[in-house]
Image 1 (cartoon, rainbow, N blue to C red):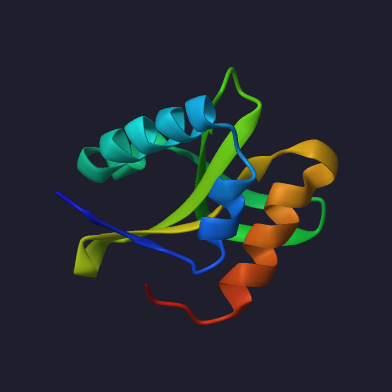
Image 2 (image 1 turned 45 degrees about the horizontal axis):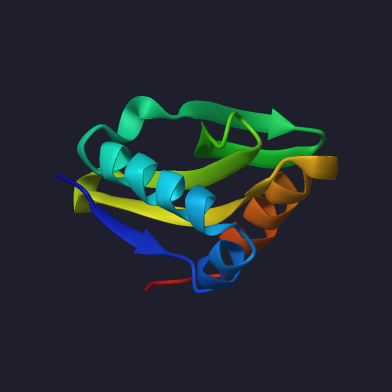
Length: 103
């Protein structure tokens, strides 16, 4: 089973979601913990290098969880959680990935 680690700003992401969506997010993260390859690989999106990152949907595909698998450490790093609107969740993922984080 993989350990889940979070970018520090994921807490802010979660606060912006409704309680019911947060519950869906945590259920999905439990699934990712045992099957990290569950998410779809991202690659390049609109000139953003998201290679190596994965996404899964919750809340009827309205919310995305973007994460990275670190196989040698058995870690899944959750980078951002948010709506796809205007590619914002992917912009956040690209920016946050550039910053080092451990939580």
